[in-house]
Image 1 (cartoon, each protein chain N blue to C red):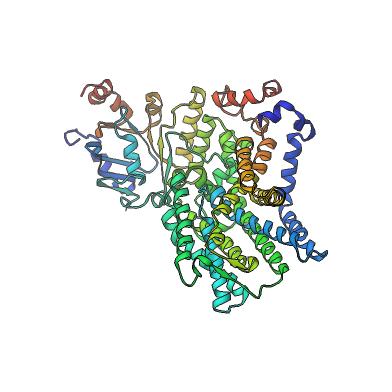
Image 2: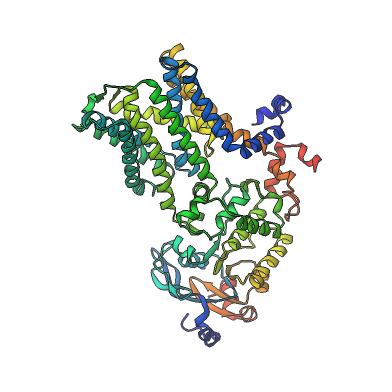
Length: 263
Length: 362
């Protein structure tokens, strides 16, 4: 990475103050394999940033190091100016980091509405909030969000009965319900049909424009990520090999080489 | 489920919509229903049932309902199947018996202390074993039960292997109302909690603990709280049991067979519900009592059979299966197929196979 000419670096330092997420030199090894190697990324408020790379490039591992699911061997993770490197996963989440999983994870045994109510962070962990029934404003927001993704009718249905695509949407609105400072999405476009992908792009855009959601997403669907991302980072063999706007990335020789298997 | 569909008999006698209405009715009048049940439970002694076999059997039904519902807080609502709940019961029973016999403490104080001891024990043990999941958790809790049993066998204060005999036993009606009171209190607490954020978090841990953590919940904290709540009610019941039975020893206080029984009760009634474990306890205990008198020595065989039939035929228990039956059409009626997805995908097609009428309906 050190020999990469990072043309966008000056712009980044200028905005360093409003970086929602910053990683510095994140390294994660599994035995002899270095899955993530000295990776720096920055995500600023209001941005949609993509993270791409061939299979096994270390994208999900980097996500896991950021969320605290894994502990990085080296490097620091800063969330809104706070060093969260050694925090437990739940505490990082509570500090405003939302996450959507690659293999869509919702609570299948509970109703769709309960899934959403649970996702709301307000009320938090204090005893009073835990022992009260959900209030009307929360229920109203639940209904709004479900209507927004056209799933209003299914509020009382067991979430496990929904189709995969619908579950993906539920996971998305659950993330919005939490109003996170930063939302990590691991392959949001994976496994859903083209017409729904269009909808999803709209939803993500709207969330970004109107709710000012900052999003950092892993994606394999190039059309999707090139269309939606403001900036893109590219990982290969655990190293960051490129960073820049979608146009820059598409014309970057190292990225093309990495995807074609030359290195 | 499928066998019922084939005969169609149940469908004509009791259509799903009717069951759904019944659930709705229970839901809107839940508090009245609990109150009504409590009053009905309190009536028999008023009408003259004050002693004898029936009195004991009904008291035991209340007792088992307490234990099954307690098991379900952790085993059903939170998804951590414990084989060690009887450890809380044993600790409660011994605490109560020792305080009553050796320290001449009053009955209420002894029972409350028993509950508190069991809860504290649960907090300590919970922080260790609740880190394990699935089979490992089940085995570890069984280990806790066996260890607790062995300790009470070795100690002087617990009376060793011969246990403790208790005198000056209050009349049966005291235990009848005590167990009923604890049961009603527990039903109220569990039912209330199941509609709060705390209850949602427990269900979330059951469905996907990793996701719950990623959403910002310190799951260890909630699991331990649920485990302590279960221990409190189990310990209270245990505290009174010594006097109720007039005798405890390691075998009866830490009864592994009971632990299996109360799991079977929760499973048969329907885990993760409030009514399920209570109904399961009443039903299975009635059957066990009947078999015990009619076919002496066969109750464990019957218990095993009942569990097998339940697991195969009604994996969700009585309440769970009924709810599933009542809600089977929900997804389609509420526009599940039409919503956003476009064409039905694999999951929809799979469900269609069970309900051929769906496609024509839509």
